[in-house]
Amino acid sequence: MFPGTFARITPDKPAAVMAGSGESLTYRQLADNSARLARYLHGFGLRRGDRLAMLTDNQLPAFEIYWAAMRSGLYLTAVNHNLTPAEVAYIVNDCSARALIVAHSKRGLAGAIAGSIPVVSIRLAFGGPVEGFGSYPDALASTPAEPLPEQPRGSDMLYSSGTTGRPKGIKAPLPDRQVDEPGDPCVQLFVPYFGFSADSVYLSPAPIYHAAPLRFSATIQSVGGTVVMMERFDAEAMLAAIERYRSTHLQAVPTMFVRLLKLDAGVRARYDLTSLQVAIHAAAPCPPDVKRAMIGWWGPVLTEYYAATEGNGLTLVTSQDWLKKPGTVGTPVLGILHICDEAGAELGPGQVGLVYWERDTPHFEYHNDPVQTAVARHPATDNWSTVGDLGYADEDGDLFLTDRKSFMIISGGVNIYPQEIENALTLHPKVLDVAVIGVPDPEMGQQVQAFVQPADGVPPSQAVADELAADLRSRIARFKVPRRFAFVERLPRTATGKLAKHRLVHENPDETGLRMEFTVGGSPAPDEDASTPAG
Image (tube, rainbow, N blue to C red; front, top):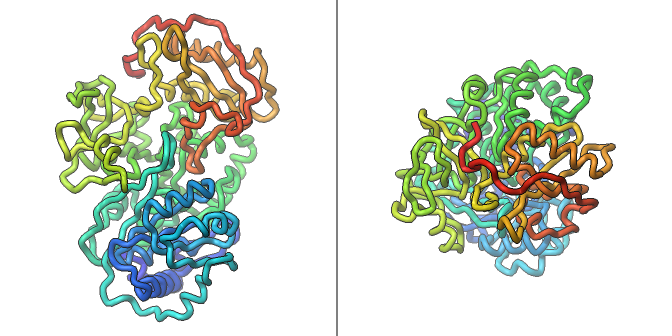
């Protein structure tokens, strides 16, 4: 099903609500406005396979734009509005968008790119005027709400968050069906696993341009539920939204859990969270200590999945199963899992390698980047693909991630996984955020360095660096402990919680507000085999 179905069944029911303002979009409005926009774009010559881009923060018209693309066979590219004008223009041009719809709140960014996106012939703005863009409300008002005679299903064409370099457009083949015909993989997978239904109230605290909020919100609207979208994430405001809207489901990233856990105990106890049935989390590794604390607070409602925007595979794990195997990201439920070495040879249980997924359906490609598309394929088997994550499978076939290949540190010939070190520091009371990278070392090849955003009221000092190093030595092998601690004002995270580590590697002080750096004692030489996965 799709929103048009519920425009007939429950026309006045909210398809989406803004958590802060309470502004809502009914199913009738969503169906009519998306049909109007689809017809408007069709009138300007957009046809199946063409590209539509949107540049907006969390606002309700994003859902109208999404469903307009889905009901007219277009690829939708939702652009990260936190990027620079040059980065936004690159994505809009790279995806060959013929139409761009922007929010008035992003008028400065839209104006900055207006002269550098020549391929975009249709330009609309909502929420207020934007110079060089026509009126989105006027375009809808001038167009009938009658659906197009043919409504081929479209798809998103999202760009990687650029955590390891320039964003890449992830393009999947268009579905060969109409928008109201069954076959949506998100509906088929997530509805039974998470219990989504017309009674679901799904809280989405993350930016709508990201794959998970966009796709999961659309899934909720495909079954007639209500999406509650936060204007932006705030830890206490999230708790208040759960209580106010009686949210049954939500999706978060681990950094949100960390912020929630660092709220004052009195604040945490203030809100009624008993409506929550499932708290989904993904997008980045969740430190085990964080997950245990969240399960202890919210109960066994957490369900984790591991997937990528590329959609090449999926694992799931419930709270109960995770507690039996702390650290696992679960059992494969989409695709066949393979762990392979650099040459492509398959590895046995407990051996760390590249995570590959085998699928019978056509795999994604990176738009305009055949080299990276080829890199993502197995060297000998075209229907196996990887996004560069490292991990291992246990004897039961459950997956454990260690890190991304590009983040792995090799010191003295031994593999060190930054994720393990970051996990060990995340809940330290003097740490607000942390990232670990490898930096050049003339003797060892690479040396471990930590970038720490200290908790409020904690001044950077040698004593704090020594305290963090001592705490780590009690929890992980000595050779993994960073030799250098750089205290920074902020870390370069995307709005979805992923670390943009390539910015740290380039050591750009403007990115982090570098304040002080300290060296701590201890031998940098590995004294045990770091290639053995941590249990």
